[in-house]
Length: 276
Image (cartoon, rainbow, N blue to C red; front, side, top):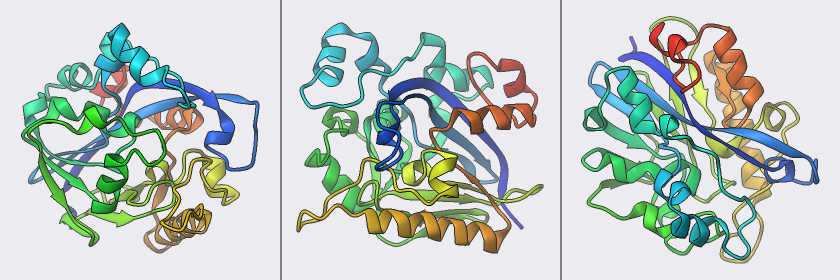
């Protein structure tokens, strides 16, 4: 029996960028709008977040915005995040304070996944050590060192781990060296696998296309092979478990969840958030 009681996807902002950053070797020149998501997992033992979105201070404060998002060689540009889309504000709408979060599982440490960490000091932070090293070296320009500062309770682990019955961290490297996905078994309905950036879009899964941004190993090799192996592994897990695969930056997927009535949390969809 699973100890997971509820899964709530949370829309914390949006980002526009060239589709080739999500689909390696494809769609150059096509701009897509992508959701920036976090996920609240409520269990019998406490509350867990998978990812925490961007640091809204770096978006709202002009000097920080310029230093982070206008930096030479940064390919993304700034995300959009209104005040009501900040993760603490959204969680507060359903009566969850930042201090109520017991653990944070970071799929990886890029700015749009780990930037909100400073609001969750006190929570246990789960991270692969290879990911930590990549972030400290800013291996691909998408890590912001300031995002990781603070008196956090880091828990570095190389081994895949079960946080409780029905909640399991699995490795899915390729996009970054220590990328991880999350397998969630619910009391009702099929399990869900949060792909993270192992699969930005449904197309990454359907056509087995690697993300556009991949890490280079110590020999300078772009590890597309690892990214494709991770996609295939996640698809195999989904088949074995009868699970749904959730891509991470796909607005069509987000809208399908909302249309299905999945309890979701966003500034625009508060009635849906309250429905679960």
